Length: 272
Image (cartoon, rainbow, N blue to C red; front, side):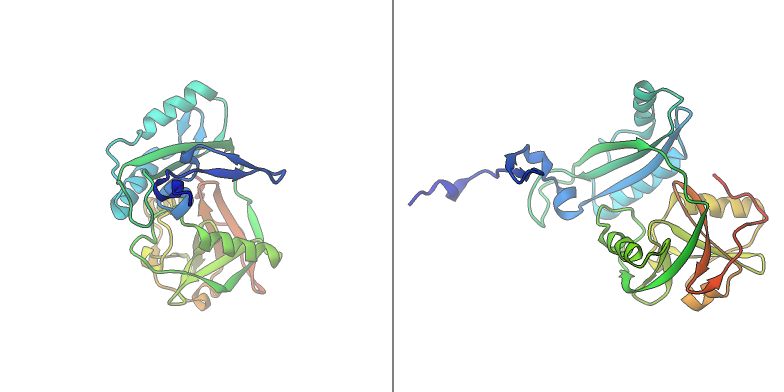
């Protein structure tokens, strides 16, 4: 019997679109790919600057602490900004995804806490101003974990939620957590307004600590507007007058949720 496989280094193959298999570098199957063992930041590069880079860096540093990644060797966002400026200049508007994932191979038990990095660069497109139709997903729940607020690579909840949304012909999906409290939208945080008071789920509700969310909250406080972070049911949201979502691409109003219509404007400029 051939005992070659008894002590064999890992080989990696990738299936091409023509059905043929091709060998590939072992780094293709990294821990981010295999286990979602990492974090990412989606950012806007505009006028030669990574917008709100301090907030993005702060969130990623926190995520590294939560999942046990060594952040000491990570590239600073100032250095990434300078790299983008050198390659693309000041006139290009870009969407940047900064991936930070655990190095080494291993299986469920990591071999190291060292972090690897990659960048994905695309043209930037602003958020849709109004999402006409939204609904509450009854099948997909956001789990409550100690890392729910981190922007991890394990995003299957949001993939399945947006797949369901597309199949239903909707513009937005609203997710609850395993306690049936409002958590977030399919790829953004959610806010609403009732009697001039702003509301948003607290981070205890399993929502991601969005940079857009942080900017909106700070802007509301700067303008002396009341903002309540807490636990809310779908009924609380349906009693709102205005509902909107936020992520790195901007702010979007929701026109209708399951037959209930909402205003699609505010008396305060919350753009960022």
